[in-house]
Image (cartoon, rainbow, N blue to C red; front, side, top):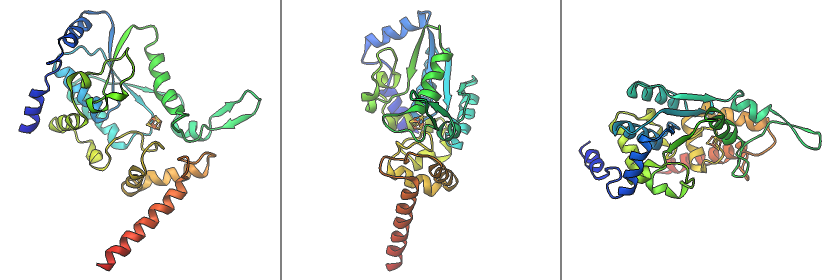
Length: 264
Ligand code: SF4
């Protein structure tokens, strides 16, 4: 705890950047709607809590619900709301993830109909557009706003939008700082960050093999759902891996580990 306090004192926002300090004051005086983009993960949680602690202006906190967050994430959301004594705006699209993946009808130019978007990949991230970008755009349509996004200082390469603000980067907070800060405030996501380095939709194909291995081990019921989805859709979960192929690989690895253990 003491270490966290000490690190926090070192990380005084804008300490080394008077220009950012001026910008913060300007923003408070301005007419723009101040929105926090809140994914519920460690970075956006740390950013939100600290912004409120510093009395920075926050008019609205927006969470885009894909419906496929880990159950612990929904508990975390309730806990944050209770802690800050303010509601989080939860934006939810009309259709759920499973329906879009397997059943949504896509009418193509050539007159044919494709059923379901199937699994997203790096090029086709239909879920990000449908559950997040479009929802926020619609919700904030007609409003002049400034959005704060929780990207940590050691991930600053991802902060590419000049229109947005990145308080964690301005403060020099790393991912580790963000997580420790949240822990120090009593938020632990039911242990999710002890399993995964990053927490996003449980069914995201952009997860590494290692994260998927952990998903299978710690959340067998979600893994079973993924196997079922794979059986009912045309694209493989990852470019070179179906969920079934991953299942076989992970099961083989487990057998191998057991065998090794029995030798010693
Ligand atoms: S985390 Fe993955 S599954 Fe979830 S919206 Fe983003 S790309 Fe889609």
